[in-house]
Amino acid sequence: MSFYFVLFLCSLITVNCEYVTKKLCKEVNQSHCKINYVSVDPCSKGPRFCNIKTDKIYDIDVNFTPKFSAERLQYAIYGDFDNTYTFYNIIDSPRNACDAIDCPLRRTSLAHTANFKLKLDKKASGKFPVKVKFWNQDNADQVCCFTFNVKSDNFKANEI
Ligand SMILES: *[C@@H]1O[C@H](CO)[C@@H](O)[C@H](O)[C@H]1NC(C)=O
Image 1: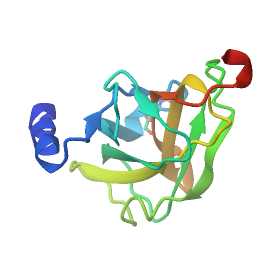
Image 2: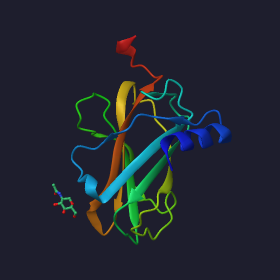
Image 3: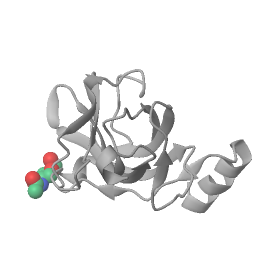
Image 4: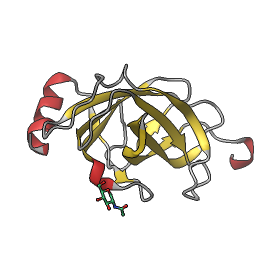
């Protein structure tokens, strides 16, 4: 499906569905997974970044083409609150991804969609990238990974 066709579908389904500009993770071998597009709902200020209110739940829809098969999948979401490309801040620690993606995953040329939920707590402040990563639980080299930028509405006292 072309990007523009998907955009059209998206606008039919909900006015809030917004594409966000994604980047691929530098440290991950990209040959195992093709990330086609990512939408965040809602994403005001998209596509360059999404404005995020703390304690509100956002949908992250990922359209991807897996180049691997997996019986079990895991996912995790990290934040890079200090913008140092370390992604030390854990938003969701590694957990079962089979609620977000139908398991088992089969290697195919067809695109799949995964749905993750994003919820930031009060520790997240300012503008920073979020990393979403999901992988084969039995082979951690087989990874799909991307980042996108968010701006939290929460500010630390010393930033005001
Ligand atoms: C990435 O994975 C592919 C497929 O397994 C492999 O052929 C390639 O050598 C890997 N590249 C790097 C840089 O590890």
